[in-house]
Length: 149
Ligand code: HEC
Image 1 (cartoon, helix red, strand yellow):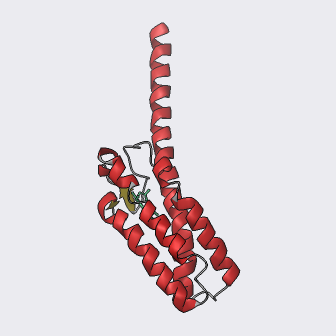
Image 2 (image 1 turned 120 degrees about the vertical axis):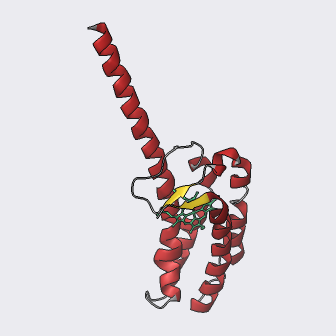
Image 3 (image 1 turned 90 degrees about the horizontal axis):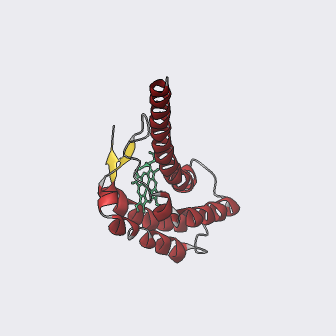
């Protein structure tokens, strides 16, 4: 009886550990998706002419992006050791072998945002801002993001 209970407890522990890891992976992906919402869900669509230019919306999305990016090093503290189910992108294990290098990719993004903040006034200046920020996002993605499908 004791042994059965113990087995059940160990199984339950195993399941919750797996769930927790999936939670961490999802949380990290959501972090990126939030940034993608500002960059691709709004800025890129405005640049392409798919969404009308709205200064208040642009300013709000820029502030959200700025607030989000600084959280990257903390959100990527734990190695989930697995990818989000069915995800297109995953995290390279290099992140946790080289966490300092990974974290060092964040300040250039924050700097790029600080440089353009308040200067975006129309579609043309938005494109300049988008390209400058995007280049820094890509700089991390090239090293630490893995294309899964
Ligand atoms: C310090 C490294 C780093 C920086 C900086 C960074 N990313 Fe990421 N990004 C990652 C990693 C790692 C992944 C893959 C893991 C994941 O999706 O959870 C990723 C994935 C993504 C994804 C795919 C999410 C999905 O649906 O799977 C988007 C979108 C994204 N990033 C947007 C951005 C944007 C926009 C910026 C710049 C404002 C940015 N990222 C800056 C590391 C970074």
